Image (tube, rainbow, N blue to C red; front, side, top):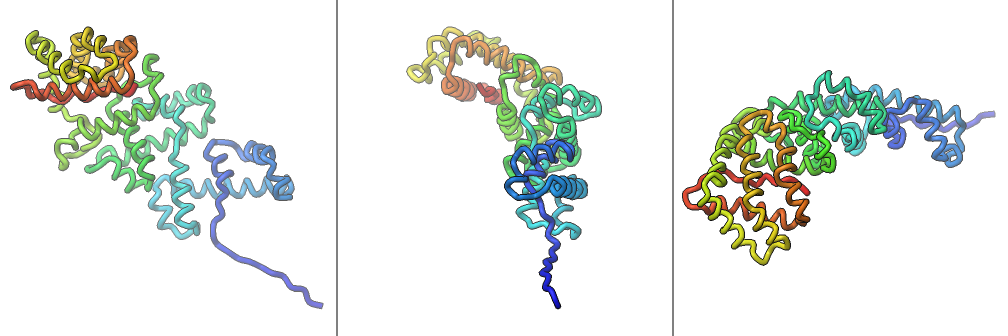
Amino acid sequence: MTSELDIFVGNTTLIDEDVYRLWLDGYSVSDAVALRVRSGILEQTGATAAVLQSDTMDHYRTFHMLERLLHAPPKLLHQLIFQIPPSRQALLIERYYAFDEAFVREVLGKKLSKGTKKDLDDISTKTGITLKSCRRQFDNFKRVFKVVEEMRGSLVDNIQQHFLLSDRLARDYAAIVFFANNRFETGKKKLQYLSFGDFAYCAELMIQNWTLGAVDSQVDDMDVDLDKEFLQDLKELKMLVADKDLLDLHKSLVCTALRGKLGVFSEMEANFKNLSRGLVNVAAKLTHNKDVRDLFVDLVEKFVEPCRSDHWPLSDVRLFLNQYSASVHSLDGFRGGSLSVGPPS
């Protein structure tokens, strides 16, 4: 008597996205098994608890072996040990380098050093994100920073080339690197209403307009370091508020252009000199490292809060800043830098 037995042999590495998410979130095997049981997977598949435990452990072992490759994503593409389709490789990389906004807001602008890493216990407690996940995210930020900080060329392109991230995630990492390099203060209470997306938007504009690379594409660290000559030129803006005739002329140009276009025109006209002084004073101090670090704090104090108290809508803020900058350039003989530095609402 003979019996037939069908055998299938394959070498494709199976990736369970749900288990991968649990591993990335820092859950232990036992906690991951409990969460999978709670999801109803035993009833859906007819598997036993022992099989589920074994399956979860097997996936965790695979992820631990893959992790060293994920630290240098191009290695994952070129290795031959794990047979993983390109689409799954991209998913593994993208999700490994994804981060929680609550976490990044706690470390944005801080030095990516051992000192900050010691604070991860407190950040984990505050945000509810597991300590293991906090460490992975922090180590990812630090790893990307170390690889690209000295590179010549576009910061976003360098990140994409060396870590194979999507354009959106690479731009987010570029903002993190830029803020860490320049040590911008983002943790003060009056800045807590600003999201990471707000700061990332500002970082993108500053990289495009304020860095060495915005002036000279051949310089080192082009998208990381602020252009010192540009910041020095901003000191010339002082004459906008020091010279009464120039201040009056600037106000006249702005008011003429915006009359009938701003819902808060009366408030803007009455408070123009204070707003102008606030913006100019912030810009003129940026030659000092401490004032660079406090840029967003100063902008909120000197410009955002006065506008908020007068109930300016975001559309009016944008119109005012665009016209304010345009009018600076139209002043006869004035060659100061652009002041298009307005923060998000």
